[in-house]
Length: 118
Length: 251
Length: 136
View (cartoon, each protein chain N blue to C red):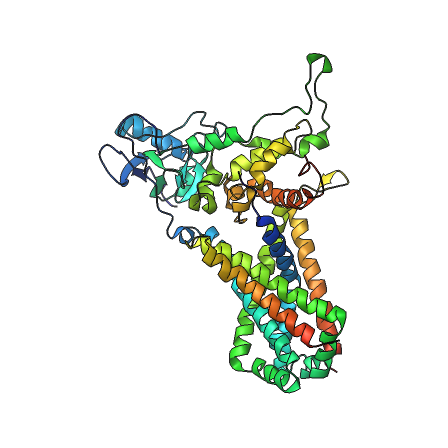
């Protein structure tokens, strides 16, 4: 039996899933509800100077990249297998759509983070 | 219920390839007693009403693993499923899911048996032993590492529960992988390297998506989901560490 | 296929609609569906990073978009999905781990699940507190 390359994607899936379980709810709450609604947080929490400083710092860049990339790879792996569960074969098109999408998000994020400078 | 039932209806999915192309439902009324199992209901049908009904059974005490079937859409051992829990009926009985039906409630088990044979389900000695070496010694702690997985009775309910097996019958499957793990986790065994080849394949642990229903339905609490999914860690470790060892993955 | 003597043509039942036939499978598909929410949120964050790199006006435009009713509704759905993800993740986590023995006794699955939830709550409180400080 041929050795599967699944471990690579599975580790990314696992890391992303764990990060998402730990951080997903609070991040969505803060960035998508609390700050925009102005309560219980204010818009200052995500003001441009502060966010720029975060994204220009090395740890900040690292955190943003890791969160966005791992969320994307986690989702890609799970969606790929869910497509199989509803009858869409694990063919090259499905792989490209899912993992290609995660790669695109990873590259675009990395490029923007680098563009932000230090 | 104010008056106790005296009968219950069971609907069985019949299939006789010599007379029909597709399975058909057939209903029977059987006497009800609150200590009757589904198996006893089927035996009543076969003995008193319809001798053509085909189904497997043997021990009638949930240890041989022969009587697995779908009861009201869920995988169950018919000897361990009781009519009192299925009241008022009708009780829908069909052959174990995800297996080809040969006849009535009898499914084809050949692929399962072949997979089981393929994992070397026996202790492979680390080095040749003679009688003079005496017996293996094993501590209670070493026993605990594999004991629950040794409880498997090969009933295949976990295969009926596993949608990944249903979608891809090439998947080694929960039961066989649990037994594979039983031997790998046994301190007396030295066959891990050979079994890892099955674990590492796509049809090994990697077809599993941790649905977990296999462990829900297991009548012996083997927890095959645990056996399969902890071997994903082993497989991933093996995948990356093989580059470090000149001989390939660790044994 | 069947090797038996006799008329035997083994009948293979179709898998179409398999997950609708059992509540356990419906819950499984719901768990898997949370991945769509994770993907959407990753795209939202990635968009934010792109807007940030494009300058202050672009960033403020993105913050404005987050205030729209559609965005708020979407994030409410995403929040629900994230919670379903966390719940199902910690429930399945014990299954992915080998037996752990502490002081001679096996670590129970429920303990592992509770530890996971504890970590999420701790991290959430910490991050929220940080954001609160930055809200001044």
